[in-house]
Length: 260
Ligand code: PGA
Image 1 (cartoon, rainbow, N blue to C red):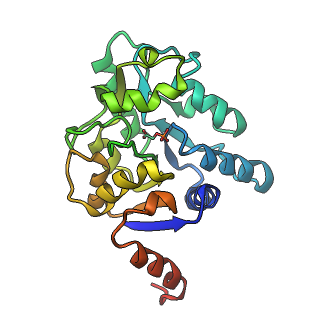
Image 2 (cartoon, helix red, strand yellow; image 1 turned 90 degrees about the vertical axis):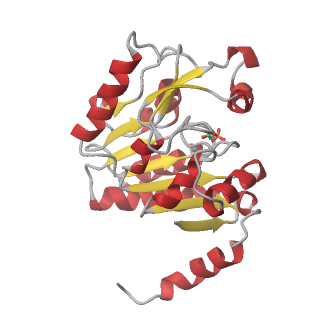
């Protein structure tokens, strides 16, 4: 796992965006795995800027989102369909038919989840999956105890996740209790993982995910099993890392390393 520590949020977002742009430049028809939440907003802003000002092209890109709340229509203000439209899809040139987001309103969740997994495979698999991390260490909505081999399925959200996300709703009781989410196993099959975290409220989860044991109690720790995972942090989110100085040392020395 590569750990990149930036001074603040904007630098972190730009560094992660450069990573995604490099994937697109070498593979214009890449399949991107998208995440929602406040963390990736800066990354999406920077990708939109690269599209508008530097011609970064999304016309052959396909996307799969990680998750969606059960019971929210695509038009609902807090649905992840709406989030993605407002914060990214409306500003870049991804063909509508190439955009996949789990349905929060299907009449058959099991069949939908199986279809979603199949579509990812049919599209060639995810080239780069963007991830945030919950304060309980989750990736997507894979709450503590989720199998590290789990696939796309219905999940009951943890109380702490509902509390964390209550800030987006009028009241905590409006936060959906269930979600449809890619599994940890689904995520691990992506060719490359890019996890972002900022702020001191994520510092403990990041330390556990990066340096703790691999455990289903912190599903982000599954990144340790992946051959190409990069974790982008701001200074506050990196505070509890025991090997922080070492990661900074590597960052500093990497440009001078012999070419492969
Ligand atoms: P956040 O959510 O980006 O809004 O902090 C991250 C997550 O729960 O995965």
